[in-house]
Image 1 (cartoon, rainbow, N blue to C red):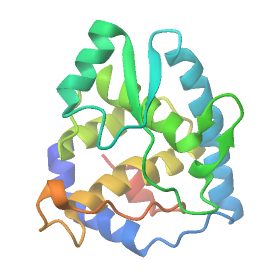
Image 2 (image 1 turned 120 degrees about the vertical axis):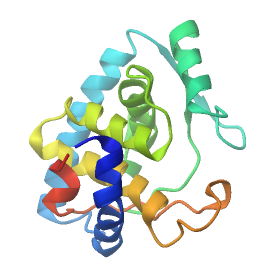
Image 3 (image 1 turned 120 degrees about the horizontal axis):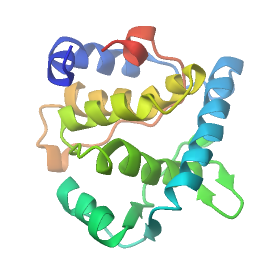
Length: 190
């Protein structure tokens, strides 16, 4: 099923699943998926840093006005700004600090923008986000894919197909960031 067809068929269902998923960062299963995710993410970070320079974006707003600007920076300047704003809920594994690197959430934003979007040419549109999730998922083991789905596909579907989907995209609030276990269809179905 194409990414666009998947979103038409399942985008609202994934958004609903994320809305109903409990935030369980302390459960054994959630912790195991995020431990695998972070371990594999750090290996991707190390590999990516051999190809590009990553700089924290601390100014107001987003570092790029669109995905094309981000991809141009990566391809032409071998550089990537990473957005460092936003709050991660207390106790969420993505809020942990890794000595010498930074907050896991920021590391993930950089790695996903590089491997999910820039390397493959996928935009920040709903379909582009779905394609980026599918491409990036192939770089993770089974356990880590559960956490990846929470951090990408589920949040994107919640943003684009959830209860605030009627609000103009530029003014639409981002969904709450949660760590938990989604139904399998939200992680593995294509």
